[in-house]
Amino acid sequence: MTMRIGLITSEFPPDLGGVETYAWQLAKELGRRQELQVTIYAPPKSATITPPPGVTLKPILQSCAGLDWPKLKNEPIDVWHALSAGHAWIAEKNRPTIVSIHGNDFLGPYPLVARPALALPGLWRLRPWVWRKLHPLWRNATRRILARALPKASALLSNSRYTADVLLTKYPECAAKTHIALVGVDPIFFEVSRAPKNKIAQLLTVCRLSEERKNIDLVLRALATLKDRFEFEYIIAGEGNLRPSLEHLANALGLGTCVRFVGRISDADLRQLYSYADLFILTASIIPGSHEGFGIVYLEAAASGVPSLAARLAGAVEAIDEGRSGFFVEQPDVTSISNALTRFLSGEVHLEAEECRNFARNFSWVHVADIAEKAYRQIFVQNLHS
Image (cartoon, rainbow, N blue to C red; front, side, top):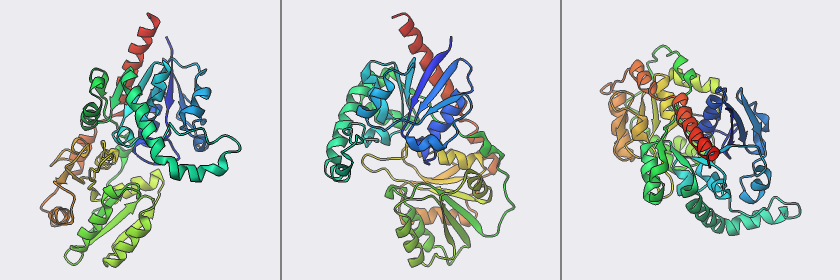
């Protein structure tokens, strides 16, 4: 029997990021399954995107419960799947609901679905002022919605064991319904051909340049201590409000000739960057309300044959197999990062491309979709007999 699945997400292409990748790849895999009829509800900007085969895209989501519920309540959906915790509110509407959790989405909730319906005609002039003044109020109201809605969900799918532990510390009543689904990696990264070895070490970071906890500044400061001892090129791919200050820092540290900011790049260009990279670097911190729930980019690097350097914190511990697909600093600070990079650039640390790929093969979107489909079927059958 065909099940009608409604995926709800405010993070979807053309935007970039971990949750966006999760939403796209899971929808793509679910769309391949003949017994599932998949519709994805996404923001209006997603109208420019051709959905994966077998998936219907409805770019109507405003990420405001007051605006979205009137559009969704009469949709012919058997099971709803909120692809991040922010949309768990639909579980309060007595609809069969699965929720994917990533970490930051329930710690510092986004989107702020509790905001009032200020998209209505005539109120647009108030939006900048209201957003600035009432943002804390809406965030607290959204937290209260999540506190009520998450325990009402039929199942929660966690992107890592770490994220599940953080969730259950906050919402212990969700223990029986939380499943470790992990994440996957796009098979196309396994097709990346390794470029000929360059005498100049190629270092790479791919992330949004909008969160200080990513610690790109610390990597730049660490590299500044090494620039007279080693030859390297450090490429930073990504956009964000921190880019100008990071570019200024790189120049001030005398790294202008060996650091390149390439901005937002295409998927093909990303794979090319991985083909040349010798080391992927993302030494992210944990701060209140924000952490690296897993880190799909570590898997993309490994699948491309590139080892990673990360901080031994949060979900990165599950995304990297130490000594096989990467290595760690215990805490992200300039001295620790500098020492770790010295070990790599001097050849003390050497990791094989094929071992990186072998580790990444443990993760697939097929596995994530299998767990999701099993949850859909359990809920569907329960509703048939209720």
